Length: 380
Image 1 (cartoon, rainbow, N blue to C red):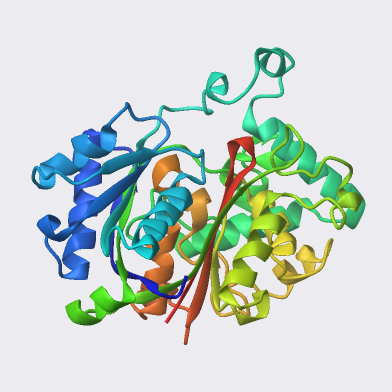
Image 2: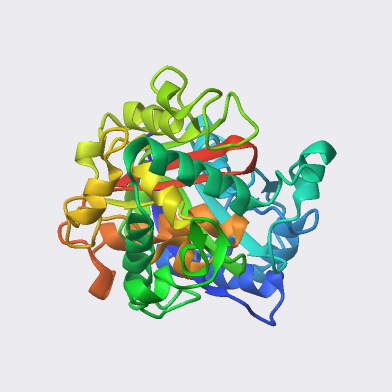
């Protein structure tokens, strides 16, 4: 996929806003166009990633930039919606149908837990299996039992991400919390606590994607898309798990491991080549598990990475420099593209106090309902 680049990136801050989703989305799209140095009239196709917005939201949002007759397509794949929309844009360019495409993710989320009726069967809801923290916590408890992961390890992830968010103007929460504050925050579902979990919210992020040939004519500061992959869990109602026990992961990998390997292969890279990561941390334990599934360490070894500072901004494998979803919140349709915007900023050296020194290759990862997983690898 190295013949396709991100030419421009833009974002509307994540949070809670009185403004409409059309205004939030148009803000991010206009910012991406300005960053790319192109006009809306030059865009040949557009894709909107969203989950909660009404039909034809992409056209409603982008009409604010001007009326055109280009195809504008809404895409939904739970938390992976942004990755799927980006992949569709890449395929459109590689097919020769277009060479300059807008990819936008926008959401205005209702408060509280995601509506289980959108995702789960009635029997799952009746049995109490539909609220996210319930199965997150069961997964965490299993890992703690198998490998000795502790409450402190989980809290340290949240501590790191909250601290990183202080320097991110697009984050919903920009406050550093002490470890004791996190460990004594209200319990949501044992062992996960309030300050270790993300909130649904509003936000938008966008990128302008171009063929390498078109980008060369336009100039600017393009970032190469080395891989953009999407897959869906093969087994299990719990979208994080393989069908059997955790010890069966090697023989029956979950969606993060499958999609990560696919992306590494297509990029011709391995986890050792990645300078910085933005990954799904809907709860702090999720980030711990992703370290292992993306190959940053072996199974059961994530606690070591946390204790020795490997995933800090100044560590060997920085993770969630933006503050992650724990701090930014998660407007589902914009989630992955928000990560991509952060990686673009890192690779351009524009991230200020959260900058990873010398970053040349970055990876963005999301995992959501239905086992939808997306991994995008970008490089200079």
